[in-house]
Length: 381
Ligand code: PLP
Image (cartoon, rainbow, N blue to C red; front, side, top):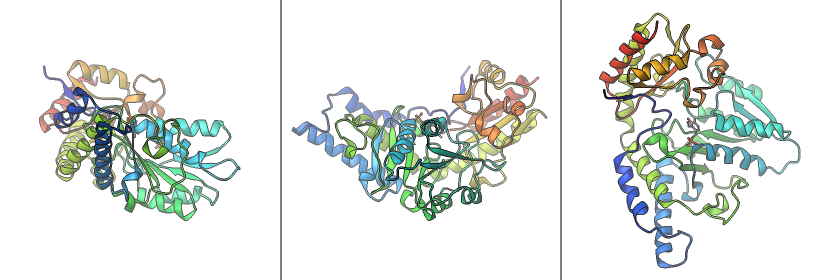
């Protein structure tokens, strides 16, 4: 039996074209891009070409705004700690984050709070979206940093980042966005979006794991969280991984080239999935309905709630039937707590315990999704 992978929000399979682009660096000898000899200079030159390409693709103003790093978690942690550490004021910082952030933002926020800074959590409305009015009410001129994700990894809700960033700037605060799930689905245009920092992860867009990009707008005060040899303009020390940079640039090129047509294709499958899941059992409901305002939700995530059942039971039964899905998020699978995202949206703990996240990708077909909804009907009893 072919297994059906419906967990693309957790990670995506490596695109063979990305692997091919990386192979020369993995197989052969690759000089350190910081060495002065010919091989080193060539590696450096390639790294800078890739930085230029990634910066253009993301809509950054200059290539030096792009730091190659170890992925989404590293970018989020560096942004929160690095932007706060660069403040000039001696009073405790005031930070606003949404209550639906990934743990990669919530954990550094918690540590900042534990060391005496003030952290304010913004709750979304029941549609999973942060209303800019709520930010306007919570922010003041002493706020240093606002961090709100571009798209949520559990519900797919796309946040009004441009408006939120503008509100932060009206009050003199910096704005960071975790754009890990939005990459390849939403238009980036970072300069136009008006964010000061943004984190990206390559493995969500058919690239390798353990690498990504942190965007830091030129001139944004930042204290590195990775001191050392001073690579990446002194903002992220460590010998650069040219294979990973090549993989990141190639993955981004591929995903951007097909973005609109793939979004449309996924949107069609998403609608069939929603309808099939709702028909599977009267106990199935949606966390949010991506059909109502499609522009507000990613086309690849469907978040379901199954009344009276636990996510783990559902996941294991579906797994036995050949379908791979997650609870609300891959990270909360196996945890005894219901998803913080779902409870922040006002969903009861009982119902949140029965959450399922089904996430689609390039290899997903309408037939696979039809098979999934049939299996779902069978496993709910
Ligand atoms: N932020 C979001 C929204 C994510 O979905 C993830 C991955 O699940 C991360 C951050 C962490 O990214 P990485 O796995 O590259 O560390």
